[in-house]
Image (cartoon, rainbow, N blue to C red):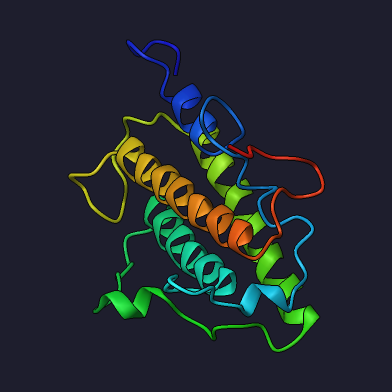
Length: 165
């Protein structure tokens, strides 16, 4: 990948990690009380649980588009927001966090695994870098929402630290 005029691998890895202005999406859920993840603070449209499920929905869709041809996006915007407002149990929350983390790991692997300028099976006119950039930016955007909700709940920063300005 280093033969390209810029290094897309670095760009995408930075957007999916704690590099530059980005928060590390792998740590943004650390230390949360699972019951707080279903709280919707006043003025916010979603709970953390909903935002995480939304990220997962799109992670799965984008990554599937890199791997195969037969994918279909949501018919309506609301379809991209699956699941309940809050987890029913700690186990459900832990499963969602595991799915989220697995998706992030798959995204990192997708960045490293093939030339970003190759076309994707799902859409012949689309390059891998287009899909991966959209995935990285979408994740970064919603990680910011999670931070805001955590701040509103008095649950930021996580135990490992995080930006506080």
